Image 1 (cartoon, rainbow, N blue to C red):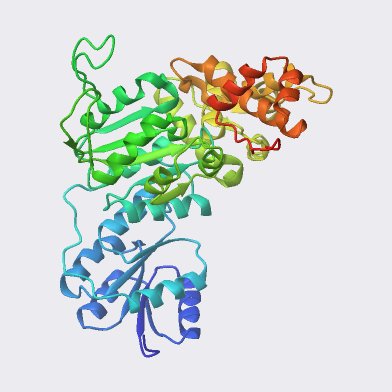
Image 2 (cartoon, helix red, strand yellow):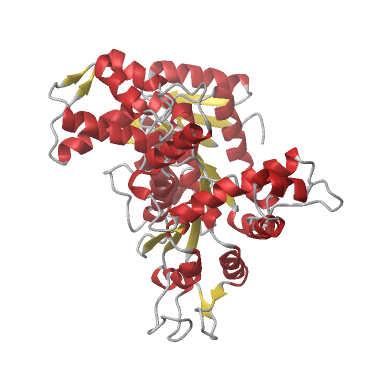
Length: 481
C-alpha cells in the first residue's frame, strides 16, 4: 500500500461524504467524492481511483448494479459497498455481485479505514461479471433485525454463501438457528438441491443411525425393507443436524467418519456411499462442557466447528424487538388475524422483558395479542398482564422447595420449545438431566465416597456404580472425584 492511493467515495448524503472523506484523508489517502453514480462511473472508466467506497442507494442508480460493470472493465479495482438497508439480502447481493466488503450504516470509521487498507493489500481478483444465475428473492426476509449483532451475522453469512464449509450454529432455544441454516442453503451454491433437517433430540437414540444413514432389509429386528436415510435424501444439497449435542456416542463416531472420509455406509450395509452434501449443525448446549463431561467427542466438535456462528439471545438485541414485532403482526394479518398496533409505552416494556424463549416467545405473544384482544392498539396494561401470565418465573421463588424449582425449569423448557418438543423419550431425557448433577453433587458432598453417597441417595451401591458408568460421571481413584 502507498499513501498516494486514491479512494473514490460515492454517497448522496453530504454529511456522510464529508465524514468519510475526512477519515480517509487523516489516514493518508487521497479522496474524491461525488453524490451520484454517473460521476463515479466516469472516474472509474477514466482509470481513476484505487478503491471504491459506494452507497447502495443513490439518486441515479443502485450501487450494487455498478459492481459487475466495474469488474468487467477493472477487475482489480476493489469495491466497498455501504448501505442503510441493513438486511441479510443486501449483504448477500453485495457479496454475490463482487463487493470486497459490505458495511451496514452506521459503521465505525476506523473499521472503514481498515477495510480500505485490506482492499489495497489484497491480491488481484480474477475477472468476471459478478452476476449469478439465480438472484436472491426480495421477500420474505429470512432474518429480521438491524442490531450490530445481527449485522455481523449477515456479513458472516454473506461470506459463506459461495462455500461448502461446515458451520456450527449455537444459541439458546428460540433464537432462530434453523432460519440461519435455511438462509445458508437458500442463498448458497447448493440452493437448487434439497434442504433436509433432522432434530437429534426428537429421534429415539436407537433409531438415530438408521434415520441418518438408512438401513438394509434385515439389518435389525423390524427392518422389513430397505430405508433411505437423511444423508441420501440430502444428496446434492444441505443436511441440517439440529440439536447435535443430543447425538448419542455411537452415532457421533459414524458422523465423524463421514466428515473425515466423505463417505458412509447404511446400517447393515457394506458398500461405502459418497456423500455430496453440505453439513450445518446447531445446538443450544455448551459443547465444550459436554466434551469435558465425556458426552461429546472432541474430534467431532472440531470437524463441525469449522465456521462458528453464535446467535445472540433476544435480550442482547432488544433494539430489534420493534421490527420483529411489526413483522410478526404482518404475518398474523396475512393469516387472517386482525391488525394490531403496539403503543410506544407497551413497546418499551417489550424491550425490557427477559424473553427466556427468545424470538419464538415474542412471536407467540404477538399471535395471542392478534387473536384474543379486540382493541386495535395494544397498551401497556395488556402487555404487563400477558408477560406476567406467560413468564415461567412469575411466581415468588423464595422459599420454593425442590419440586417448585424443578417445575419452574420444566416450564421454561416447555415454554421455549413450544411445538418443537421431542417426538418421544422426553421422560428418560429429563431423568438423565436430573440424575447426572444429583449424583455428581452428592459425590462432591461426600468427598467421592461412593458408599456414603449411595447411603445419602438411598440406593444400592451397585446401582450407584452402574449409574456412574451409564452417565459417564468422572471418578478419581482413591476416593475423591
